[in-house]
Length: 103
Image 1: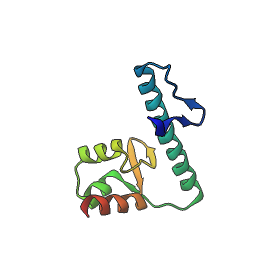
Image 2: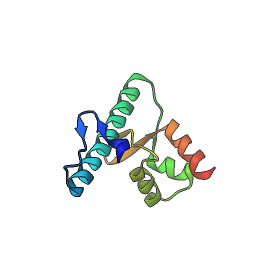
Image 3: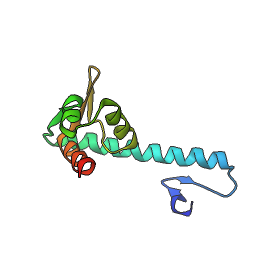
Image 4: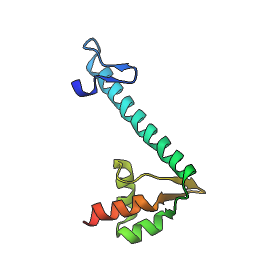
């Protein structure tokens, strides 16, 4: 717990109950994910990034829809853009996922 003691204004003190500490840690993790998403969004606006849809990712990596959802939820790949109920991923992230998933 000492590792996550301070994170930009949040302080985990010994006076908090166990439930409050868990909620605060969850909040800090969500804040980190949001910050990484905002960085990704800024990079997409700056660069000319090639996007791939979910069907391409599933066929290229060789995984099912449920596996793609699970990998997305666990943070192995991040959705770069959503339009009209379609998810798009950066080509760089797709390559990284394929290399790490298939070896």
